[in-house]
Structure formats: C-alpha cells, structure tokens
Image (cartoon, rainbow, N blue to C red; front, side):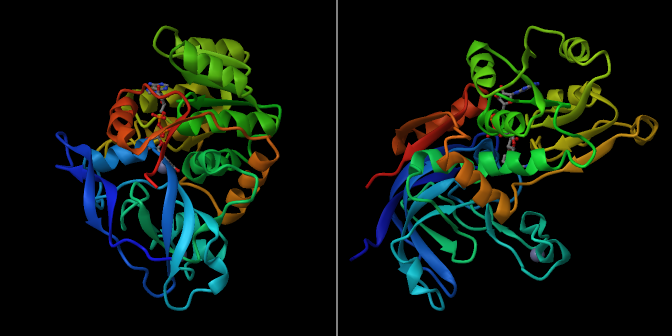
Length: 350
Ligand SMILES: NC(=O)c1ccc[n+]([C@@H]2O[C@H](COP(=O)([O-])OP(=O)(O)OC[C@H]3O[C@@H](n4cnc5c(N)ncnc54)[C@H](O)[C@@H]3O)[C@@H](O)[C@H]2O)c1
Ligand SMILES: [Zn+2]
Ligand SMILES: [Zn+2]
C-alpha cells in the first residue's frame, strides 16, 4: 500500500487560557522508528485530559488524543511482521521503561519514566500516529472500533481506580463516584456495579442521572441542586461511603469528596485538577479518620485485556456518540463546560 506523505490533524493553537484546537491539513506524517509502528487511525475518543493539553497544563505535544483505534500500516525496524494490518488501540501509556520496580510488578501505568500519547509524543487526533509496538493493544474481532476507543483511556482508568479500593473495601460496600456521568465515570459505575459494589453516582443533570442508573448505580445525587454530603450520609447509615473515587478534575469536587468517605475508608484520586491545586485536607484529619488515600493513573495491560473481553461479551457497554473529525474542536468546548454525557468519539477522514 502506498501511503500519503501528509495528513489532516487536530492541532493545538496557543496552548493556555486562549488555547484552541484547530483542524489542520497538509501536516507531514511521522515515520516509525526502531520498535515502532505507524497506525492509520479509524476513530478516537476525546478525553477531558485532551482539554488540559489545549489549556496548556503540563508540557504537551501539538496533537492531543489517546483513545485511538486503527490499523497498523507500516512497521519500523525490529517489529514482528505479524503486526501488519492488525487492528490496534493506542493508549495514554505510549511506553514504559520495563526496568523499574513498578514495571517489574506489571504496574507499567505507574512507571516514572513512561512516555504518554498526546503528551510526550503526538496523539491520536491525526490520521496516522506512530506508536510503540510493545504498548499497543490488539482489539478483539467482533468489538467495534468506536466502542473500543473509550475503553482505552476512560474504561481502563476506572478499571484501575476501582481495583484500588481493595483490600479495604469489599463487594456489597458503597463506592461513591464523583463525576459519574462523564467519560470515565459512567464506565466506572458499570465496572464497580458488575463487581458487586453499591455505587452512589454524583454528577448533575437528568441525562447523566439516567445514564448512571442505566449503568447500575443504586443512587444518583445531583451536585448542582442537592446537598451532596447529607444525601450520601443518608444513603449510608450516616457513615459515608466505604470508598470515594474522585473522577471530576475540579477543585470544588476535591473539596467536597473527602467529606463523603467514612472513617477508615478509601479515597482514590483520579480526576486531574489545575496543576497548582493541592489536595485540600489536613494530615491531622487524615490521621484521625484513618483514611487511606490512593492515586490511580490508567491501568495495567491485564486490566486492559480483561476490559476488552467484558466489552466483547456485552457486559461493559460504554455510552458513545460518534461524530465527524471536524467536530473535535466543538467537543473540546463541550467537555470544558461539562456538557458531555458518556463519551464522544470522532471518526477520522478515510
Ligand atoms: N487518573 C487517570 O487515570 C485519568 C485518566 C483520564 C482522565 N483523567 C482525568 O479525569 C477527569 C475526568 O475525565 P473525563 O474525560 O471523564 O471528563 P468528563 O468531562 O467526561 O467528566 C467529568 C464529569 O465530572 C462532572 N463534575 C464536574 N464538577 C463536578 C462536581 N463538583 N461534582 C461532581 N461531578 C462534577 C461533570 O459534570 C462531568 O460529567 C479529568 O480531570 C481528566 O483529566 C484521569
Ligand atoms: Zn484520557
Ligand atoms: Zn518503568
């Protein structure tokens, strides 16, 4: 197959408070190096972390996107020929060192020397993306690319986060998910409910309420119109949830969410607030209440494979809406205003 030399991409202009995503034609296609492949992207989910790139938080590349599904069209040196023509997922974890303590335990998602798609290298909101051959994910036949896309970051991140509530919290216990109606949250509700936890979903609006209930939440609390702390306490015999997973990357959510967890419970940080925001809790309170505070970033390769199999069996069913690639800038604005229910996925131009 003869490949083109230039392509259409989504490009970040003026990253920062004036930053915006623009569709740009005629951008050159990168070539795969040693141990790398070139993937022709079919579709990509758009994650709230892509908004961080646009807003200039952290150090990012020009092209965001890290929920891409496509076909391997070219191999770099040292890559097995078996990968050619395979349908694969390109995830946030572009590569890990393979040598550190976290990597040796299989916890590649917490490798200190990892590279990230859309952060350290250009991302999946382009027609052709270069990926590391060892860190792409084979997409099982029978699972559509559009459904697989949000599993690669949103789904995997909540598979990782829900796994972090153990060993302290057990099936039958309450998990409150803050930001439950968005991309990550709604899949998290389903994963946690499938594992037997009683999920209290916290978000706002009737669409998100309906989606969280459909995903298996036992209750929904609307943070825009209800007393969140009082409602969660009332649902949990006055104690608070056994675990809280804070998915909303919003300071207001991080101020409120620790009040929802019972003493001796687990708090998992997932949502990414502005870079200068610090966890707003006194060590004295953490000590006195015996809280277990954990962090979670994406998930392991095993969790990825397990999640894809659950989706193939129809047990995990992300709610997606599919749009044209030219809609990507609009979707970024909608995410910035917290208007997206579930996940929006864009199809790349052929
Ligand atoms: N740690 C990780 O593994 C990881 C991975 C991917 C994304 N992220 C981060 O997770 C966050 C969520 O990403 P997403 O793509 O699901 O975003 P999203 O915009 O789809 O969902 C966020 C949800 O939070 C809700 N929300 C906002 N303020 C709230 C509040 N005060 N209380 C309760 N809910 C509130 C919004 O209504 C929205 O539904 C972002 O900060 C993103 O950068 C973290
Ligand atoms: Zn993401
Ligand atoms: Zn490592």
